[in-house]
Image (tube, rainbow, N blue to C red):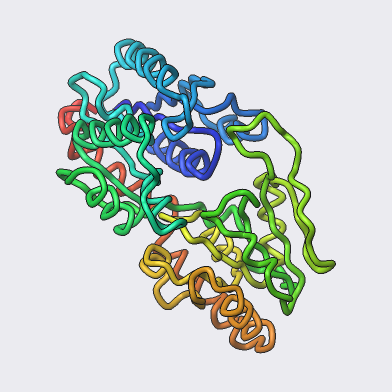
Length: 368
């Protein structure tokens, strides 16, 4: 079986892709991977070094949610069509909406990781103001969803959002994202430290909420300060208390070490259709303190300690309860670890995508 996968290099979709593609190739699937957004650096592509037979095509085409991306989207679709014609995959797996409208006989999986309108609703409490760009964007999302053979999403909440805001989908399904547990170390002695990951400018991740109250333990906020639509590459200098460290983006190995020693992971997001960072923290046996928003409730159930969404005092109270009670902290750390091992492994995720691909392309399975 041959699968063509599209991805972007600017966020969590890249990490998701690394787990998916690695798992597919290890199961004997031939993968053609096409990336958009930016040309990835050597640290981003290191995971590919251990894979034989991966056909990778990096590009710098803009992403569909970026302003003034219309010309790039048309050009990238033409480029992608040429690769499809050349490689003739059995299934097309698109991690962007736009390409769901691509013509061709191969079945198409469109994965709804996030979208602009649901972000605005979650973060600002209203839909974005009307504009020609927004009309174009809504149309491309709708056409992409309608063109898909199957629409997948990493949470039921996210699937409900695209169906409510754009169009009903046929053959849709929820496939939770996953990480490889063996990458993380849940056995290191923990320090009294809180960690979160989120770009300071990102109102959805809402990392700045942690700076509004004095916290009961040292805090490390990991996140690059540059916005992907600006020309600045510098880290945003934000004034923070003495017990708060503001770190630029970390490599995977650096983040693994940081989570191994942290005792608590804070997830203060207003918008989080899934969230790989809390999964990585849980697999490192951190206790999870999470914003009480529907997708995080769906995903973590009773395995996280929740606080009122966008309420700095409620967040502080939840953190204090764990810092002051080591037994409670250990209980929540173990709950998160067990839950993540059961629900959010890469092996389970890849198995579910393989099941979907086989259903969409039974002739390829019979010929294998």
